[in-house]
Image 1 (cartoon, rainbow, N blue to C red):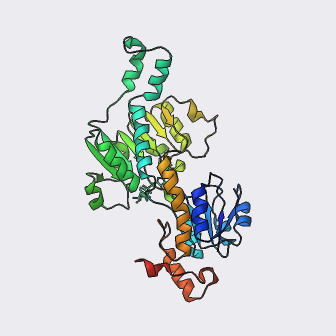
Image 2 (cartoon, helix red, strand yellow; image 1 turned 135 degrees about the vertical axis):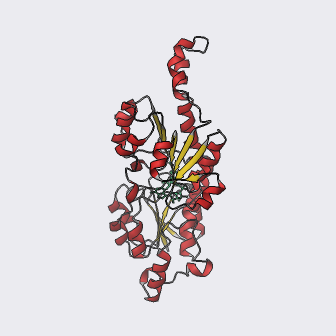
Image 3 (cartoon, rainbow, N blue to C red; image 1 turned 30 degrees about the vertical axis):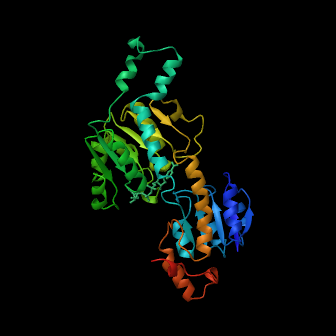
Length: 352
Ligand code: NAD
């Protein structure tokens, strides 16, 4: 069987080793367009993709042997999940592989803002010190405490929960979370109360976003949301850029609708160096690197490749982002569809 590796990011030696040890033939080509992906993966059984180019319905339809699409990391918004499920193709990810890193990073962005770390560093470079308090007076007013505040978490899955554990140590008065799919019984384990979006927006002093990007939450944080938020509020987004409307955020930060924001992700990536967002002193930004660490890179790469090997051997992957595909594959097997011919049934080794 054949696996296509079309990612343009670094593909570690370990990825290749996992695939070779499993006896898979490898077609490796960093692809910039959907057409290049189609050409490289035309007779592939598995494909290891990056975020871009998108793994669209057109790409999936053009690959008749494809059984599994593997994304490195957690987010699968770049893959057409509905099309994959209809066609009987598994979409795999690695939940939890960088939960610690992203939760730490969200906390770091927030603390950079509440403690004004980037600006204080600039002031030190300009010769300022606390023995001349007048030089630092403006900054002092912008330095805030988390103790006694209301913290809002938007999306209460792995990373949202990990973030709640971290921020609890800073003494907030309460932590609330907006997640229509999370049960309160789970939130209870973290001392968090689930709420509706309105309450999250109007009550929170700090909001951290940890939900996947879907069709229904694109621009969830837009002009209307910013108008509801406190003028002192700080927004952190380490999830996906399009959940926040960039133009509305720019307006909110310049007109004082909210106080500050910390972003690891932007609506269009990479962010244009000329973007007006970069001129804002109350915006702290990092280059979509919240999940990064030596550990998550090594473990993530390994699982990225192992997901392909597992599915092609009828074993459960580390993460299946379209679980309904299991029923679809069962129907295809009954109809002797060519795509899954000769592949052991995953349901025999799992509780699916
Ligand atoms: P998860 O699946 O464990 O949790 C996501 C939670 O969001 C779930 O509880 C789900 O019910 C909830 N949710 C879904 N749609 C929602 C909506 N419209 N409104 C509110 N809640 C909603 O995922 P996770 O591991 O916590 O990761 C969350 C997201 O973080 C990922 O989807 C990914 O896009 C992003 N992420 C970013 C980086 C980075 O480097 N910046 C790294 C890893 C993950």
